[in-house]
Amino acid sequence: MLAGAVKGVIGFGMPIVSLAMLVPVIGLKEAIIVMLVPSLVTNLWQGLTGGRLLELVRRLWLLLGLACVAIWFSTAILVSFDGEALTVVLGGILILYAASALTVPRVPSPGRHEVWMSPVIGVLAGVSVGLTGTFVMPGTAYLQALGLGKDGLVQALGLSFIVTTLALAASLGGRQTLPLDLALLSSAAVVPAMLGMVLGKKCRDRLPEALFRKVFFVALIIVGAWIVAKALFI
Image 1 (cartoon, rainbow, N blue to C red):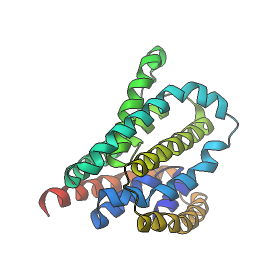
Image 2 (cartoon, helix red, strand yellow):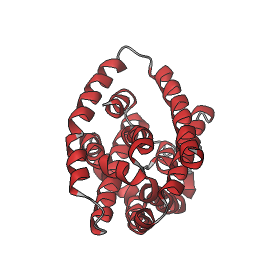
Image 3 (cartoon, one colour):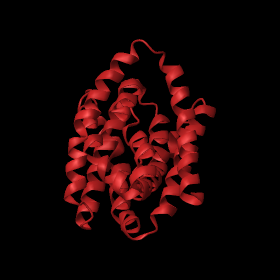
């Protein structure tokens, strides 16, 4: 519900908040599975509506295609590697993303370098999704730099989250690491996630978005530091 509320206010944040709150309690691998269905459902409308789907597919197909390939290979590490080490990586990503969002007013546009940067970012984002379940760094930051406009960015984020979530679910399922109990829990989590989105959208009209974003990113740094400290020292 909290993750849905954040997404309702600022348009993204479902996987980030879900993982940040669940990982210290149930572990990284389990948290990734639980957030799969709510993340997919809440992004379907965002990614498939907006009138620019074909344009975005033509522009982002290579980035997303290579991200899917990278997700398949990197999930092999997720299912066999030390969960605490990957949890530290997740905490570091959360801190890096939140700190950059607070300190860098605008990510530079790739311009003519987009032709080679998109494949590179696709691979790096896919590795991040496969290892930690989050697309935000460098995926979200890169999309913000493409100059898609507000509506285009929202749809591009939704499309990216749909594709990478499906790829992650397929990769985990293909390695027999989607236990039925967690899959059912993930499906049940859709209801509070959608309720949270409704509440978040209502709050959007009353709370200045700029203020909320600052509070959100500061909180994300704190949670990221907590995740790292818990994995290393507790």
